[in-house]
Length: 411
Ligand SMILES: [Zn+2]
Image 1 (tube, rainbow, N blue to C red):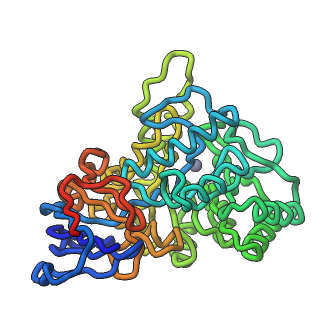
Image 2 (tube, rainbow, N blue to C red; image 1 turned 90 degrees about the vertical axis):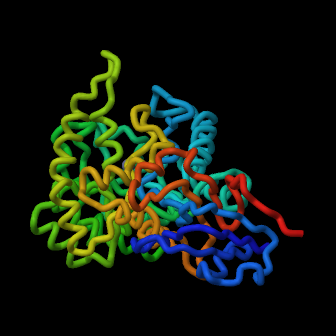
């Protein structure tokens, strides 16, 4: 099937200004990008969509996503760990909530059950349930005795052999990414962000075994030491990095093409905004959020200046930071890290697509047709992406998830 989307202004994902034109989609791919002067009547198309001057852009990518963290804008859970059937219902729902809000791809930063994400990723790919293209993850792995990091984490023994066995096990479960918790977490256990939870030998073995098994590593890493371990392990993506010192920043810049970085402001900002009832103590979380945002205000712009690829995604899924609000990260990049809206958009599209390792995140010939039609200009105001009513069309691989009202089918 050929679909022609015309009378649009195109944001191609690279960060350059909007360009008027039209896009031809054939099957699941972008077949051509046409200038506004092209003779569109001469182009054979089964469906013609009049964009009415709206912005056509790539679907967004969440780089730090936990679909099995239950809460979304549609349903808040006040417990973190859910029974198996409810967990599955929540993860399936959250996948649909993400694509409803313009996210056509997501990289998982950890699951609360072993098989849940491989199953969900397969169901999405098969078109059985709506959701973002998903890089499925393991449970979060942290070493034994690490209390307070209550994210359903797993432990499979210490030492390099245990790491190798864990990677082989992960391959068999069908995940693509393995989440390693290399640093502690101040928000859950004050003072622990400086802790290093693995030895150099364990991390090296993990890196080698991941490569041998075709797996990627996602690293929860805060301090300079944790960051260097993650990079040495060949981690595909580093999260947080809030306590990076000058040496760590230099090390990251020197290896900038080897990894992606997602600071994750969403959860910090939401923690500061939250007004919990008296029986919920969020003081540690709020203190940690304040400190992290202050540090990241210097670190993130410096890393961006030095060419590190910085992505959006902010631990959505807590009751105070529910799924569906994921696009808030773009505006946080503007407000807290000094990005222009176009730079934040490029982080959410082109760079996210590179992380996925699939031809997504750009409006470019040959790329998968994951496309949004947006009412307004998000390169001027990234916050409009937070309003699903402004998303006129959501297309994934040429298939309409949300069809625009103005659509003419040609016989
Ligand atoms: Zn996370």
